[in-house]
Image 1 (tube, rainbow, N blue to C red):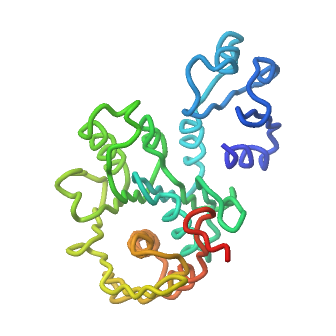
Image 2: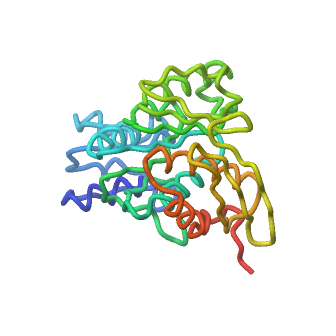
Image 3: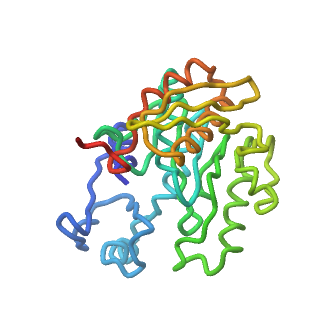
Length: 273
């Protein structure tokens, strides 16, 4: 929501907003609005949403707004998954830093949110209420699929169906090799796999107190990089980021520099002393 506010602000739109933890919600907050954008986290009986509809003010979910905005970018890379999507979004953005991407991310990196300007949009794509089906994506990444948001998804199969629909909308889809038979996506273009038997694979992982050194098998040979984030899970995250950046067109040196510069998402295994 903060990213959307900044995006519209940069384009001369007068933006206001409210938060349940910062002053609360009130029907008065929508007075004079031409459009009300709401997060899927609020209920249908939210006082501001009800007031906007009663007054005939157009309303749009955050996901719908992001979907419309995504149409304005030359290339969109969307990252989805039950776990890791914020981190991988940040890694991809860092790997593509030479291309100055806009970055829609559900967290902050060294206290900063992603930028809103650029020809490329690297976006975190949330599966809640199938919101990621609104975004236009050229390269879609699926990290993993585990049952979550059970207020919306009543079974694992319904979640898989939603992820498969997300995957098949892109020109290129990047998925774990173990999920090929689970998702059975039929992308518009290419299917790239990550994993032991995939197009991209983590073949060496050497951890230390501040991160790790990794080697990644890619279609362009072995890529070796230094990560300044902890854990094997982040080494795996990095493989997906390598795949997305390389499929976009970044070269090894650009990707290695970007991964080395990535300091991690705030509050995720963050080193504080």
